[in-house]
Image 1 (tube, rainbow, N blue to C red):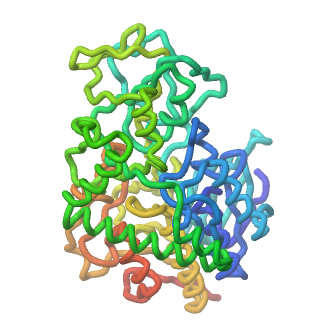
Image 2: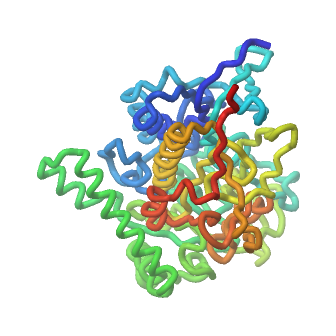
Amino acid sequence: MPQPVHVDVLIVGAGISGIGGACHLSEQCPTKSFMILESQESFGGTWRTHRYPGIRSDSDLYTFGYRFKPWVGAPIASAEEILKYMGEVIEENKLDRFIRYGHRVIDATWSTSDRQWTLVVGTPDSDEPTVYTCGFLWMCQGYYRHSEGYTPEWPGMDQYEGRVVHPQRWPDDLDYKEKKVVVIGSGATAATLIPAMADDCEHVTMLQRSPTYFFSGRNQDELADLLRDLEIPDEWIHEIVRRKILKEQQEVTRLSFEQPEAVKEMLFDGIREHLGEDYELAPHFTPSYRPWRQRLAKVPDGDLFKAIAAGKASVATDEIETFTENGIALASGEHLEADIIITATGFNLNVLGDINFVIDDQPLDFSKTVSYRGAMFTGIPNMMWVFGYFRASWTLRADLLGDFLCRLLNHMDDQGADVVVPALRSEDEDMKLHPWVQAEDFNPGYLMRSIHLLPQQGEHHPWVHQQDYWTESKELPEADLDDGALVFTSPPTG
């Protein structure tokens, strides 16, 4: 086996988190060597994996974009626009030289005696794995499995004679022109696919078991447009609009807990604007849960509802009884004919990149650990996992954790420490533990299916996985690194 390649910090994943993390390291820890390992053939993560028609963000790019890179387009952006933006970040920060594509991490082993991680990595140009070592491991691989999406097993699937496609593995040769299409699902993916396909299909039906809350609005920001007309610098516009949007999102989130009925009516008004006051919203657009218990699906410019109003698309809310030779039989007795069935039914959670982790010869059971600020974990030395927000843009937390990790690395240098591991203090030993996310707070299917695989959280700081940008944006920069929850050790001397 060849000599290992060693760096101070190894980043796993060249998506939004990994590219942003590299920028933070370059700026805030300029003496640290680092490298990014990416299993795909290029950067982008989610935005490279998903190639279905109309693929776009469901967060605005003023907050989903990096705080250090102004966004100058429409708030909701296509995958192509996001990849272009990320490519500019890589070029402007000269990150290409640090990225290794086609590098899939197989094993990650921590050795306390060696005081480092050793990673066994598969590469496309060799049958022999490559070995990398690092002082700190920064997991930026996201939280779902890129290789396959989640498709339930329904009765009769084997007798269906048409084509079944999951959006995550969209085939290049799929011809849906003048075809009858059923899209199973009701979230952001379904809301994106249907208007993108509707004009070409004979008809598209969104088949959902339960409704989703949709937020319909113009894909435009009037304040940003005004500031551009005034020739305000892009950096200023980005920051001003970013703060404005965050303030608005904070208010909607607060109201969803305190005045959920008012938020419902606001969301329903956005639908009625396109479908008319007489359109019966129940049962297709009236979820039984309060807003923000699952993620709101954005519908820019009301395109989904415009397709429904034009008769090109429709909605069915029902249970699947069975697949048939030419479609789907519903529990109500209705039958949906379909030449193509698209299962926009979510994804499979990916826990730490499906990598085989070992800590000092002991296999890691991630579910037995306790979360430190939703980023580090008891018993796991020198490792951080970026997990973004549910109710705000993923990148907001990636940026905050980038700052936090850089501060932690610099603090370790100041202390002469080379190992840090979260550990419960004496005052934490009797603390009640809860799941990574509590179902009454946020409960999408992909999370509930795999919650048993994820770490636990405590009931007081710093062991809470907070999922609140507006709180963390104040607390993380001021977090006390010497409160005893992080145990630092220095290399032996002599």
